Amino acid sequence: MSDLSGIVKAYDIRGVVGDQLNADLVRDFGAAFALLIKPDSPSVVIGHDMRESSPGLATAFAEGVTSQGLDVVSIGLASTDQLYFASGRLNMPGAMFTASHNPAQYNGIKLCRAGAAPVGQDSGLAEIRDTVEQGVPEFAGQAGTVVERDVLADYATHLRTLVDLTGSRPLKIVVDAGNGMGGHTVPTVFEGLPFELVPMYFELDGSFPNHEANPLDPKNLVDLQAKVRETGADVGLAFDGDADRCFVVDENGDPVSPSAVTALVAVRELAKEPGGTVIHNLITSKAVPEIVAEHGGNAVRTRVGHSFIKAKMAETGAIFGGEHSAHYYFRDFWRADTGMLAALHVLAALGEQDGPLSELTREYSRYAASGEINSTVDDQVARQLAVRDAFAGRNGVTIDELDGLTVDLGEKGWFNLRPSNTEPLLRLNVEAPGEAAVKALTDEVLAIVRD
Image 1 (tube, rainbow, N blue to C red):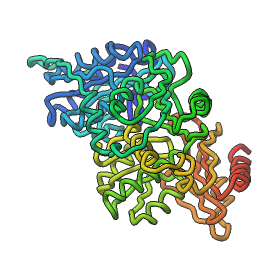
Image 2 (image 1 turned 45 degrees about the vertical axis):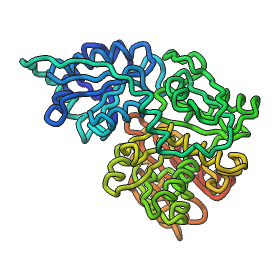
Image 3 (image 1 turned 180 degrees about the horizontal axis):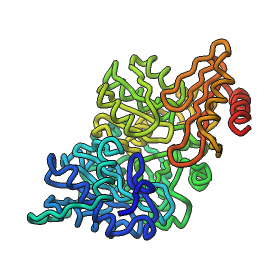
Image 4 (image 1 turned 60 degrees about the vertical axis):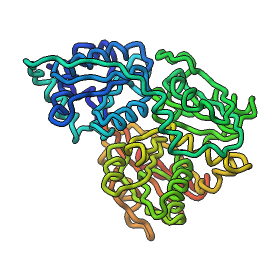
C-alpha cells in the first residue's frame, strides 16, 4: 500500500473520491478500525452525510468492520453530532462519512471511540494508517452483522432535555442548511417549539448548488443575511455541510462572533453549575475568559483543535468549551461538539427576554477582531522568529508559544501567529480595543510576515 499521509490528517481521513479515496481503501480502513477497537468494543455505529459518494463508502467501511468479526449499527443519513450522540447513547465506537465544508469531490471519515471520544493521530489514526499501509491481516472467524437503526428522534429529544425552551416567546428563525445535513436535523429538532422556521437550501444535495456549506467564509452568509432582513426574522442560523458547526446572525443580518456565542453559552452553563470550568482556545476573544471569571467560572485556555479541547475537558471536568471556528463542546453531550445545541442555547437566551439579539449579544462582544488572515511564506519558522524578535523587547509585552506565537500587548491588543499543518501558510488573528487598533497591529505584523 502506498503512503497514506496525504489523506490521514490530524483528526480525520479526508481526500478526493476516486483519486485518493475509493471503496477498496475505505474497506481496509474499516477493517483497521475494527482491529483497533476490537479489544474493547464488539460493535461500531456508522453514519453518513448527503454526498453522492457517502452511502457507498459507508457500506464499504461496514464491510471492513464486519470482516473482522465485529457488528455494525447503521444510522444512515446523519449529522456529525447525531453520530456522536449515537456513539454516546449506544456506547459504541463510531465512524461518520463526511468531508464537512469541503467541495463536492471530497469525502472523509471522522472516527471516535465509545462515548464519542476522539480518534486522532495520537489516539489511533496513526495506528490505523500503519495497519492499512502494511496490509490488513485476514480474520478467520465468523463475519459480523449489520443492522439499521434510526436515532434522529432520540437525538432531538436529548438535545431538548439539555435546554429549556418551554418559556420562549415565539421567534422567527431563518436557517440556511447549505444543502447539508442541517436540512435533515433541524425540522425534527425544532418540531413543536415556538418557532416560525424559514428554511433555506434544506434539500440534501452534496453538489452544493447554492453555495459552499462553509459559513466561516463570509460570502456563504450573504443569502442568509439578506433573507433575515427581508423577512424581519429575529435570528439567522447557518450550518456547515455535516451540521456540527453553527453560525449566527442577528436581526440586522450582522454576524455574531463565535466568541460571543461561546461567552453567552458559558454564562448559561455556569448558571446551572456555578464555579464550573469552561475551555476556550487561544484564538477566542479575550472577552471569553473575562466573562467566565465575572460569572464565577474557571476559564482554561488550550491549543486550537478539537482533540486538545476534548482532552482538556476530560482532564478538568469542564462543563463547556468553545472555539473561534464555531465548534462548541458540551460535557452533557459526551464532551463532543454540537452546533445544534449551541444554537438552542442562543434561541433560549433570546426567547427568554424581549430585546433583539443584537442587544443581547452586545455585552459579550467587547473587542474588535481581524478574523483569520493567511499568508503564504517560504519559511514558517523564520517568519515567526522575525515577528517574535520585533516584539520581544517592548515594554509590557508578554509572549507565549502554546500554539504558534501569541503576543500580548496589554491594553493595545494581542495577536496569534500559527503555522498551518498542511500548507505553507501562517495564520494571523488579531484582537484590539477598536477597529483602528486592529488595523494598525495587523498591518505591522503582516509587514514582517510578508517581507
